[in-house]
Length: 266
Image (cartoon, rainbow, N blue to C red):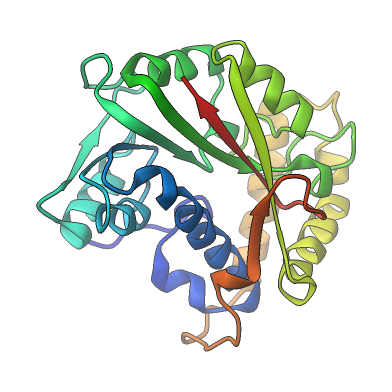
C-alpha cells in the first residue's frame, strides 16, 4: 500500500527529493543511531512508530521490538514494508493505552511524538508502567528555542506544544526522577539548512501563531497556508547529497540545538 505523506510521517523515499527534506531525514536516522546503545540486545517498544522505518532499523540489533501507532494506515504500511521475525507492529488505542503487560520492556523510544500529545501525564504514565525497573525512555522532540519566538505557538499544524530544555525537563520529572536532556546539533553547513527553514517559517506564520489565536483557528489558517504551498511545490526525482547522519551530533548543551533528546531512567 501507499502511505500518504503528511510531513509528520517519515517515509524514506519522500525525504530524498530536496535538500531540506534530506536534512530532516538524517536527523531522524541520527536519533535512532544514538538510541542503539540503549536498545542493543534489549526488549524495545517504539511508541509512535509511524511508517516503521526506525523500528526496523533498531530491530537489527535489539532482542525484540514492538512498535505501536494510533494510525491504521501507518501500521498496515509498516507490516507490508518492514516485516521481521523479531519485530511486531500493533495499533494502540486512540487514548494511547498500550496493549502490553507491566514491565514488558527494557527501553521505550518516543521520537517526534511528544509534541503531538495533549495528555502528557497519561502518555508518560503508560511508558512508566511498561518499563522494567532500571529501564530507559529515550524521547526526542523539537527544540522550540530555534523554531519559535518566545511567545509563539507552534507553526507546525500537527503540534500541540513544543518544548524548551527546561519545560521538557519539568514535564518529564513529574513522572520520572532521573532525567537527562541532550541536544541535537551538527556541522553548520548541514544544520544551517534546517535553521534557515525554521526562521523563514516562523516569521511567515507569525500572524497565525500569536498566543491569543485559538488553536482551532491557528490550525485552520495553517492548513490553508499549507494547501497554497502544496499547489506551488513540485516533487522532483530522488537526489544525492554529500552528507549523512554522521554530520549530526547529539550531546549535552551543543548549540544551536534542533531537537531535544531526553534520556530518562526508571
